[in-house]
Amino acid sequence: MSTLSPAAPRLEDAERRRLAARVRLLSWVSLAYMAAEGAIAIIAGVVAGSIALVGFGLDSAVEGFASAIIVWRFTGHRIFSDAAERRAQKLVAVQFFVLAPYVGVESVRALATGARPDASALGIALAASSLVVMPYLGIAKQRLAERLGSAATKGEGRQNMLCAYLAGALLLGLVGNMAFGAWWLDPAVGLLIAGVAVKEGREAWRGEGCGCISAPHIADAVDGCDDGRCAP
Image (cartoon, rainbow, N blue to C red; front, side, top):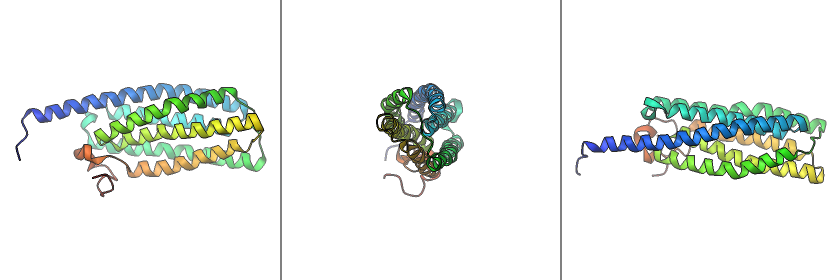
């Protein structure tokens, strides 16, 4: 086997910096979008008395924080830091667990008391917008995560995909309530948000789907990437 030329490590570093810059850009876009989405959803949810909309807004806040974590992780010397990757992975995973208790409890309460949310045209428009934007961001980040071997970036991308799935469920619930008076769809969607958040949080904590082949020097040190579960 031929030995690597002295230029090879520098080229690898340059490529990693380029990919890290793309991750940062996508995370900044996510952060800006999530800030607007979260504020609008929470305000609309409070006005309409919609647990699902408030939960969706809180999910946006959680995802925005996850985006900030990824910006931190891929800035400066941390681009090449195994310790920063592990820390970011755990912090992103924790964000899923922050969301679940509030939304779950409030959804159960709404089902038990029969609290009926008002129709929300603003909420419907917001859910439709997220259903378009979030899949693009989520897929792009997960592809970059595979190339970087970053479980933390993979987790943030999965949060974006979760947001898209929940936007679809939220849209169904809001339209069902507006068109048919199916009030129970709202807290049911809230319970779905809580349940999926717990599931995704557990997987993100373990670093599942981390794409360890693309950057073994990082992946070997990330929890979940050293037990043979990643693709050969």
